[in-house]
Image 1 (cartoon, rainbow, N blue to C red):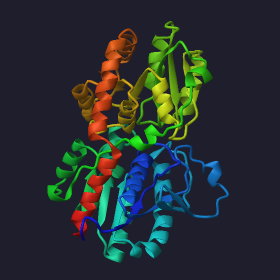
Image 2: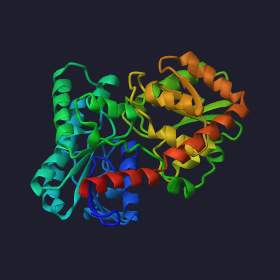
Image 3: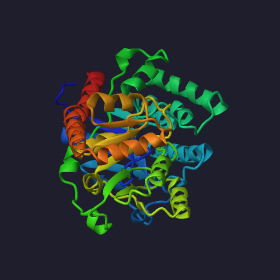
Image 4: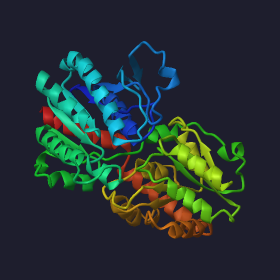
Length: 412
């Protein structure tokens, strides 16, 4: 197959827009650009329900299972919509999607040249493997997070427990069976290699930023709408779940409640949102505003409205994570306060795109906020450095080219 051939690509993804989060953004971004490169792309996914656990209103009575977005054919299958409050509830959701997607894909995947299965959950890898065997086509195991490691590191799953042991065995089996593996970070690549997977079939395809979306984003004056015109705004925009560790923002707000010109903006949905809202209400904090999850076309306007983007993770043990929202903040020329460790912290230090604070260091978060508030020149420097870095290395168009090169190598 030449590098100008049209490839018929099937993506398998548990998440897809209009759902929010890095997983949906990654797959939709790759799919969109692969279509622009001349390929035929189909995505099998569920009816949108993440992270609220409820089918989105605009899809409740939608009988047509097929839609086209950005030239990508999207086939939606039924899922059991559930909130993500426990690992067992998650597994129930994952397996219902597995069976409905399998039934649909068995009838359709024979029309494709290659499968890309994006994990987590690991059940997506099982789906990719089964379809690959049935139709004798190669499959790429796309790894956004290493499962079950990420669940253990986030405190959602007990290490050395039954689920942990079984998940590791399944993950290693799928790594060995995959035609190719595409982790999103260097640390994830090393973890996979340490499972005795040959490096010649592993290629990093990082998360990226869709500058096409950012440059054409809807502009909105959030300062005026929220009556925050003279405030120093620190924003968090993304999922509000366990792994995100958004509670640290509440703790910082408590310590800064006497600084009346500082305001926190939390935008998104997730299982932790109601609990955090209740806590803010009980503490009578008036320096925090919660907004519902916004369409991806509005997120850039939130970041450009804000003075600083806050990027927390629940634990410094999440060493191999580089949050998509970090890259998105830099793409919107926003300096960041990263409340995490690991590869993301190393990146912020290297780029000089913000301040890094340990996830348990609330006093350090407060100090970082005050420092940036009083240092407009430093904020400008961080903004410039971050923007230049993501523009050079994390443009989703070029990362989709990397995925395309992997596809051509497999099919040649």
